[in-house]
Length: 264
Ligand code: NAD
Image (tube, rainbow, N blue to C red; front, top):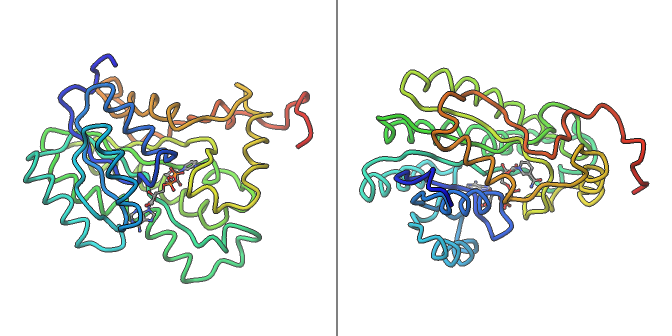
């Protein structure tokens, strides 16, 4: 509400519905004065994203599937035509076959390993390649990751491996794009009940575990992530790049179960 994003134009990928983390970030950026462009993945989500875009006065740039380079090209071409440039981009995209977000990591198939890494990790680089061309005066790129990249979390499996590679990509991209004034960061969000998260086995247990054991004794919301995203997307974060910033009610600092944690 304080206008820190005034004059900034941003592309946000990854809104599926009003529970998406990307939606929390979009609302915060809009409230702070940003102008937004949104994409959706396929016709099923178009129906959900269009009314949400309207709420934020955002441009709907159309279908974008990160496994289809032509759809990414089309998005950036539209942005070039409409705006002539871009100040920030939010990548809130991940995918793994639901069957493999349960049980043992070792059982991951080659096909799902490739698809999960491609959609959840390579896509950031593929999008950054395109965004760089529209950010001649610098910019800010933000992606979303999870603690399962750092420590083994139940059922997270191949997504944990993909997020570890994503976090490494953030560092490599930060070095490549730094001289152009483009910053690249990640937010490591605590667990939130979204469409993507509902694919993860025992997710309710994971939420409760975080609530009972995080220093702040709560889970986080897409709006919490949105507030922290403002720091990284705006000039408040102008000297921050290559960073993985935890927005998890402090969960990542804890070494063992809280002594007062109830049974789940
Ligand atoms: P969500 O289901 O609302 O969003 C996931 C998005 O990924 C959807 O909009 C979907 O359309 C998009 N997507 C999947 N495959 C795609 C493809 N091939 N091309 C284009 N888009 C594609 O769920 P979310 O939890 O808001 O997820 C957003 C990001 O946050 C993901 O990277 C996720 O891993 C990450 N994250 C989520 C949590 C959590 O607990 N929910 C925690 C930490 C990080």
